[in-house]
Image (cartoon, rainbow, N blue to C red; front, side, top):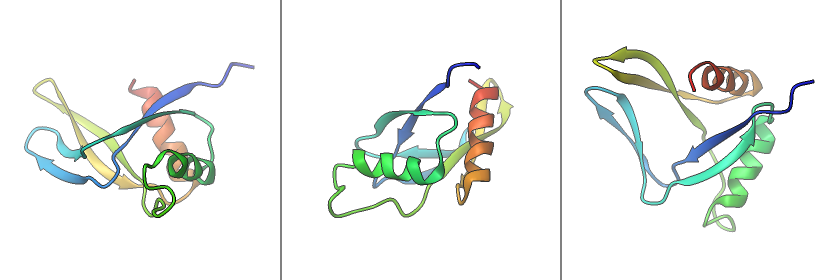
Length: 102
């Protein structure tokens, strides 16, 4: 059996999504959080892990997870759209997309 693959995940906490003419969806925040997750993590465990890393973990919890989906290339730049992760199938699809487009 192959070892689990770890994927670096960037958490944009208390940020916003900006529209960019080239990239389309661009996430921004003051202090992004970088965490590693196994590609087979469950949605519940991912939310728990993110909550543990939040600087405001005692007062705030994750209410929405968005994934920046690469959709096309434009003049050498990757274009993205945002997709909400609602269930394990959404998370599995996001992980597969990451593994296909490192």
